[in-house]
Length: 382
Image 1: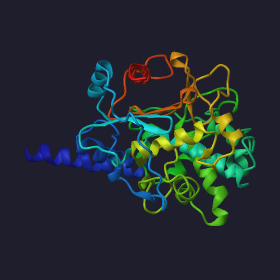
Image 2: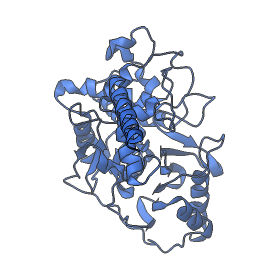
Image 3: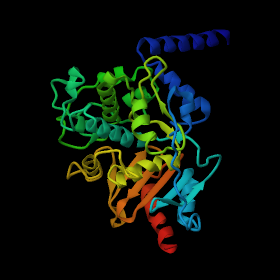
Image 4: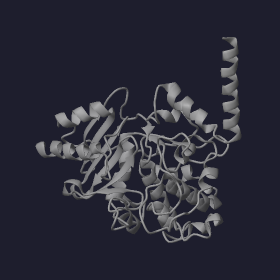
């Protein structure tokens, strides 16, 4: 028995040494954060297990007004069932820039911080628009190699990163612990991972969703603004969080305490009401209550398809015409959504633990249910 135990301990030690020597020790952090907390994948409260930068609340908060019919509607049976099954913790409908309906479950409420996951990609794209308008970046056609010479043999542009058409050899795999996606989430040197990527397909020709695109975009923006001694978190705070009156501070995950590189492709911990502000900003073409935060042309370009063959994506935003309603969408892997329908002046927010089944459609089943049942509620109570 003792001999067997010694063998087992020896094997574990060898595995650990091998992982460190081959730079796969990030898997240990993944196991500690996920499995040792009773989960099987990343989860909405996991920000507490990572280093974070703080985005302070605005010094001049602008609360959402409550609609005259606030919470007078009743959630449909179908929506209630789906929310229960998928663990929806926040559901919000904003009508005519006022909160018309909101519902929270479990321990969550109006100020609860949960992980945005890839909704942050839309926010990083907004930072790109701001950096262009302020002259830090020339425009969507500026070569990435102007910032990172290692890509000088490629025609890849800033716009290719935002529109998911870079041609990078990133593998968007959420199940393998050895994938570049897992490494980027748990490793301690995110820049090293991203700058080891290669361009293997012609940039600017076709849409392929890759989180590495947005991470490289965030690093590029950071490089552009750092001459003025600004980091990406401060830039987000001063250009958006402060003037748009965000009521709560937020957290943005970084790779580790030494490198302090934000995960630009994901992982801003905030609440449903504050996430919704980006829907309103883009709905109003970059104008926030009379202040032009973003260039209207940039916004208009962002929320229409870049590629005719891929009408589901623009620059940093998912797109849909379900129910005949043109909408643009911030979206996270576990069914995080800010769905904005400009023609009806509606914003729908959903945060939760799981998303619905994903088939060949651009969106998983829960997205379509959210839209259909929200409109059912609105129509019944109109």
